[in-house]
Length: 442
Image (tube, rainbow, N blue to C red; front, top):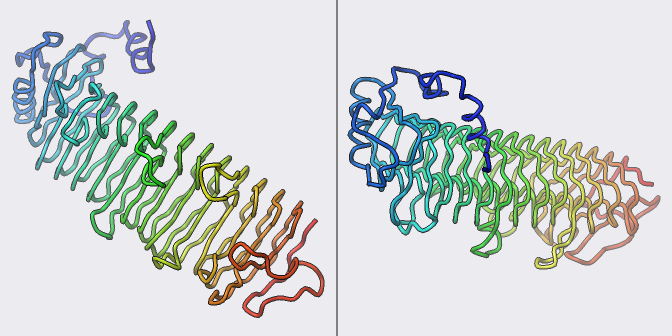
C-alpha cells in the first residue's frame, strides 16, 4: 500500500473520534452529514443531483455538508450559493468527459478536504473543477488530479485557492481568467503537461492577484511553442500581480513569466533548473520589480525585454542571486545572467557562472536609461555588456565588481559584435552615451 501525505494523516488519526475526523480544517459551522440527506459513497451510480440537493439543503440551514469517505461519481456539479462541503477521504470522481464540478454565477462556495479525480479524458475544455462568475470562493486542502484539461479553472471570479495538491493535469494546474484579486497560496503543483499557474486577463488591466508560497515542479511543454507552455507561473495582461515566496523547479521553460502586465512584482522566489529564462518580464509592460530571488541553473536568469518592438519598460532588478546559466541546444544562445533594455535599474545583484554574459544592457537600438550599479559578476567570459548600436540610449555602469572575466570585464556591443576593447582598462575609449566609473575587476 502506497500512502500519500493526506492518506497518512488520515490513517494516523485513527484514534480520534469520527466526528473529529470529519471536521473541516478551515470551514466553521454546524456539520450536516451527507448520509442523512441520502448521499452514500461507493455506489457506482451518478450522484450529481443528490449532491447538489444536499448542498442546497445544507446551505439553507447555514451548515457545512460533510461527506463520508468513499467515492462519489459526479458530472458537471453546479453548486448553489452558500454551498460549503467538506469530506476528508471523500473522492468526487468525474464521469465521462465532463468536469466533476462546473458551477456558474454563484457566491460563497467553499470546498475543503475533498479529492477530485478525473480520468484524463474530459472533452469540454474546462477544468476538472470549474467556476465561472463565482464571488467569494474558497478551495482549500483539496486534491485535484488526473484532469484532461486544467485542474482548476476560474473565470470572472474572486476568492482564494490554498493548501491544495494539484497534479497530473493535461494543461495548467490552475487557470484564472478575468478574475479579480484572486489569492493562490501554499499549493503543491506538480507533473502538469503544459503550465503550473496561469493568471490571465482578456484585455490589459488591473488584476491584483497574489501568488504566494506555492511549490511548483516538473512542468512540461507538451504542446510545444516558444514559451506559451512550460511555465511555472504565467501572468498575461494582469496588472498589479504579486508573485512571491514560491519554490519553482524543473520547468521546461520559465519559473515566472509576466507578459504585458503593468506594475507586477516578482519577489523572493527560489527557482532551479529552468530550460529557458527563469524570470521573464516581456512585451507591453510598464513597471516591474524583480527582487531578492534565487535562480540556480537556467538558460538565462532574468530578462526584462521587448522595449524595441512592444514598448516594455520601467523596472527595478535588485538583490537577486543568479548562477549557472547555460546555452540551451534548442534555443538561440542564452547563457546570460541578467538582461534588461529600458528605464531600468540593475542594482545589488550577484551573478556567477554565466556561459556568455553576466549582465547585458540592451540589444541593438533597444536600450535607454539603464543603470547597472553595485553588482558582483563572477566567472563569465564577459562581465557586463552594453549596446552602443545606432539609436541606443544612455547607460551608467558604476561601482560593480567583476571577477574572472576571461574576455572582457565591461564591453560595448553592436548586436553580437564587440565594439572597442575592455572599457574597464585605463584610458579606454568610452562611447559618449555611457558613463563607466568606479568598477573593479580581477
